[in-house]
Image (tube, rainbow, N blue to C red; front, side, top):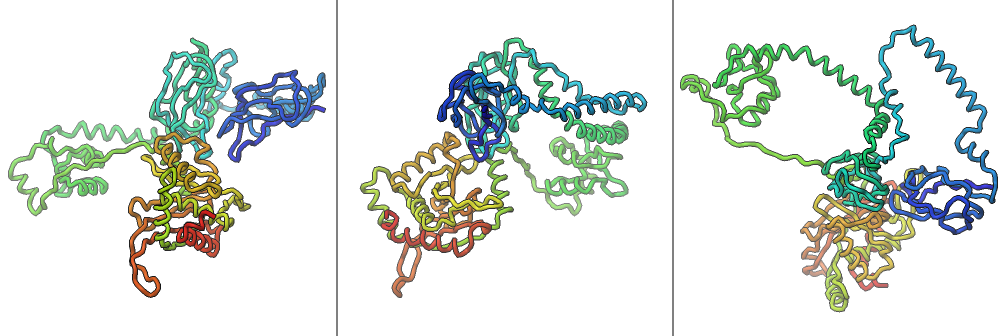
Length: 569
């Protein structure tokens, strides 16, 4: 009996897959374990393995096409088996009830057409015109913004490596795209000519937004753009109507303003906008003038009846004003305090994809996860001695951060309830230990992951941490480098910070903030001595981790660093 092969969910965030290449064709013999195709997911290109035996009877998705999870992609069965009925069931064409419903809809639509002339047509359905665009004969493909990471919602075109008119081959790099985590290359899966670029370098576009069109030279890509825009026309129409209503409501006020400006005499000397000694100005204009140190009596009003409004203050230039005669100046300056001279300035920059994601994810964490904090002091005297001794024989230089990562991983092995994730209706207890290491970069923060940290030596952790840190600063991290953390460490000790609290990094249940090592007077054996103390603060998601659980974890962590030999066991 024929078996339907559906698109499997190959990652926790996958919603659809793209068939990168078929490795089997219709008519080929297929055995369990054979690779049918290569599937491009949101994180990687993976192999689609067959669990059935038979002949590949049908391929439902062509190469480079996308199909949602659980969508039909192929049928495997016996050679010569009739799958016509199976295909009808898949397409929904074999149900008599559906045909009856279609007929009813046709009848009802005809009735509405007959009744329509009786009523006056109020609004012509403009979107219908764009829906009828015929693109079947256009040999071109629309390139949309792909989802390059699990948290990506939009991408920024850093630079185009191809220009309109260039010949494109499958595998060529079209552009560099800045995501929320890294700058990645946008690869072409099509052959042809670059006909259209829809997003300029430096601009952002949301997922599935049109960024380019590739096809035959001279192809009518305008129709493709019309067809793409027609999908959003229905939702945009109401907002446009509201905007047009607002504009018409504003128009009657414009003639009055123009009349007043025409009647106002043009003068090089600013005429005070006053009436009976009272200056006519809006409250906002007065406040802005006060904040900027501007004498509002020198500002010429452009509002109704010469009233000073906000734009007059914004465009006011003291240098362009000629002072009036001395008596007037004396009158206006009586009792006036000296005005501070200066110029306010600022600059605005577009928010980067990384900063947008940091803002979104940490705000969600802070306002949805009930945080509590546990702080502990650790005597680092023995850790300092152990590090010095280890660096004499280690192939790489071991840092205190490396020792912190190793100690945290060993502590998590003893306290698995800390190595967890909140999933809404269930809690995930992770058997593996992947430590996320917060790394500061120019535009924000990245968290590369050291996998299976509990099973690695200090020199291995040191080597991997240096490599990932360098990749993060050079924007060379790949999705596999930043995904899958089960616990996060943020260390600001090297910046001279004594202690701080960090925001939990989802999906982790905890994050540990590490302060600097500081010489402090401590009491030991009844005597005051100088010791090296380090403060750590564990931020916990109270939905998953309780105070006693977090405290026990910190006690183990403290004991390992205060006697580093135990880390190696």
